[in-house]
Length: 470
View 1 (cartoon, helix red, strand yellow):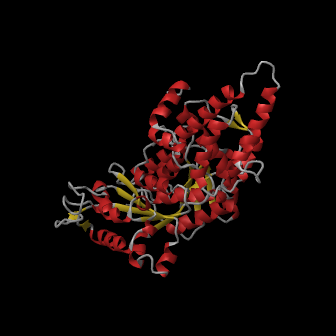
View 2 (spheres, helix red, strand yellow; view 1 turned 30 degrees about the vertical axis):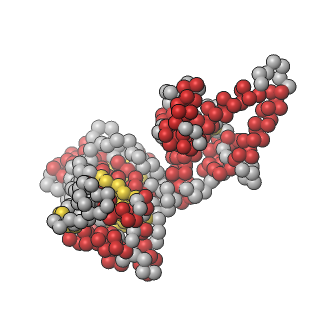
View 3 (cartoon, rainbow, N blue to C red; view 1 turned 45 degrees about the vertical axis):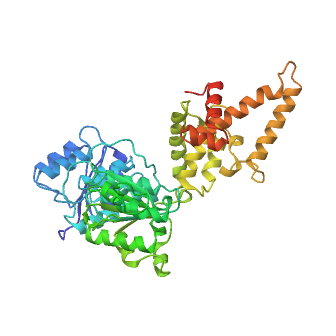
């Protein structure tokens, strides 16, 4: 970095952004030069002039910021750090920016002091960023969030987009640890290879070894044929091990050996199996504390904890709750084949103020439930049950339902010509519970029958009677 005042160039089609950055950089003793288009910037670069640091917007008329970085890379590698700013603060934008060689990714609206500090850090790093291929446009991001805590998750995924190192994801249950693992895989060099996920608590302890490493025929009672384990299934790709903190000491030892040596034996096998697998682990536990208590191997902890990502709970990213509610209400409507429901302002405020102890998983289930049970196209405050921060916090959901049913029955009894109460209420009752059970079971009829306490034949008959086949 030269000893003269830092020469910082800014390209953005928004005049207000150019003005704010030019003023802030100048006030800090830097030389700021602004461009309203990528084409104007490139013409200046072709004259042989270069900045110490470039700040560029992503989406602009004509050439966008990622195309600018590609043009710079074609000149023989990025010779100066590039800071990417964008109003589109989603995961794909973050990954695309880093893959294109960005030094850092800064979502709008940004703090001006933070931007200036980032320019100084970029200048100190010198030629840290190197050019690369722009990221390919992917599917709509499954991860949603504009909160600073989620932006940090996006940044980390972006920084790791060219790496295959082990990652430990920590966070409370329901915060989306598997989504982060899938994003790490999708935006890695292993993206075209398998992504294999295993929740270690979902498999009985005595079967987990076979599940991970496979077994040979005759290895134990019931082993009638050879089984390929999850490590072999994930060869060349990524193996996601959820709730790693609950793994037994013996399996911890075997896992450590695989990570260290890249090979293992199937249960009952004599031939070593070599694999190339990236392991991403996740836990809701404090593994450092588990190590201190002797419940988790310290050497395995360090093997897994090369990079750590913490998924924030919803109460730490409340500004994301409206975005998540809108998204998952649309998803619930799509699953159920109905029109998406909207939230009345008071209902939206109520849900945004709720602490969501079950995090995103609980919010998703709430959206499914509200889509099923809210009677109109708009979800009102009195539609929200107490368990999601609704009214009448002292009562139970069943008590509230019974009270509403009693009011309806009293109104029906005084209505001239009203049919018998059960002729109207019983079909509505059964139809509501049936739809709810089917939604919870994702359409699996045997599971829905179990939830309702019916036999499969009864469920099939009721679906036909109530015309719910669709």
